[in-house]
Length: 425
Image (cartoon, rainbow, N blue to C red; front, top):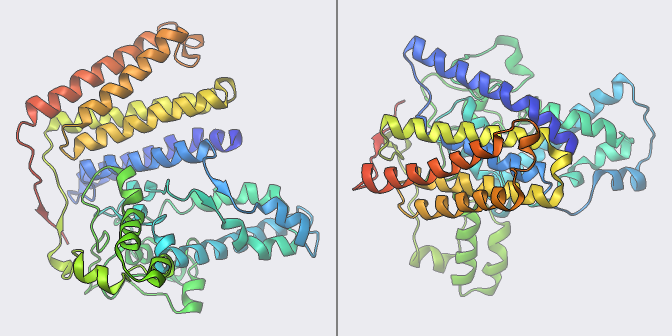
């Protein structure tokens, strides 16, 4: 986990810089693809995923090292060829996992967060899951294990393959000629994120599009069918933590409510649009029927509030960067506490973005917990070693958060109402 944390220490600033460049480019050409609150929600989702993954908070069913030790038929040495093989096998495993996530109810829960944005931009690439707490991906790497690809090679190639999926989440790059026949491109991935009937559940590839072409899930972007983004059952919240568990909560309710015992089991493994008949009739769920008249989720947001939420994101990034830099020194138990404070903070300000007044109490509890850590330890997880007034600055931040959340919840936002804006196609 420490190695992964170090990789993120360098990757996060790089991603943020690219997102800022994309926003600035949109301003220059006067064609925006970013909604401020949506972008903040996307960045916040990425941060929750980073907290979860960097702390290793998952139950692994079977590990790749175990598979290599017990089922390897060959023993490939770490030459350049083994890295190529590992990359291809990883990409195919990613395609299979992606296909499962779109086709099976229980797996869709771990992927719905990535599709929840009603925009399409580099920021939405960071909408990654925190609900994938069961580690089964190694099962999909059995071909690599049979070939004897060393675990060290997988450990190097996997984050590279993952980070390479960032760049094609943009509307500013058109079709790329011959590359469209080999690689996943922005045009192809716009199709994947679209909810148009012509596009939905297409282009599951991650780096190579050849898998989609082989298995019949490929769809080219068509000029006369502009993509509409989001999910057919809109999230209707900026809170990424709620989005992560909306689908599984619906599955739990449906499994509980249905009278058919077979359906209580079947529901978890059926397609993502399937619900028991008795539950579907008694508890209907609104689904978007006409995507071309989609009304995007929006909440009131003054310029001051947008700056405040942006400030919260930047501070959260700074706190995470310090955690990665000081990872081994902080220690696992303290890392759990550190991660919890950051996690609750994200829940707090994104709940405030939804116009919920109880967000103040979340922020109050989180801030008081942070101040308590500083009071009882005399430090903020070792920050005073690098900045003598570090704990004072952190304390001031928590106090400011309390005051600001009260202001935006009870003074500026006296009568919160959801404001729906028509989609821009």
